[in-house]
Image (tube, rainbow, N blue to C red; front, top):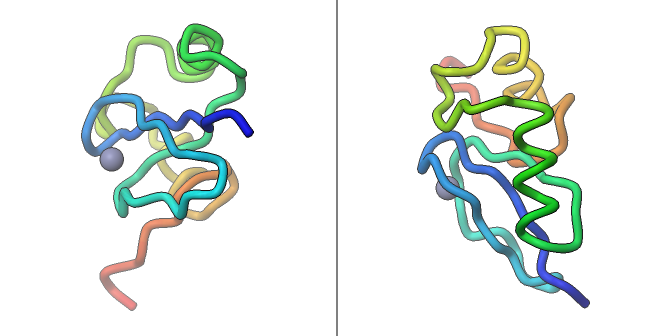
Length: 80
Ligand SMILES: [Zn+2]
């Protein structure tokens, strides 16, 4: 099984997760499409442009990530 790729808006970098690995990063990241890192970077660019960190993406996308509408890590609500 190939690695899976994710973009982390907290660390500002791509994460690689092994197929059978529980993602170790507990921050705001989203799954990227692609079988290679280059393809994953293309997917990231098409969806988020040059944004690296969470505050660089539109609020609408932030909300989608936080609420789990974009597949990835679902951040805990600190107010809960
Ligand atoms: Zn991370």
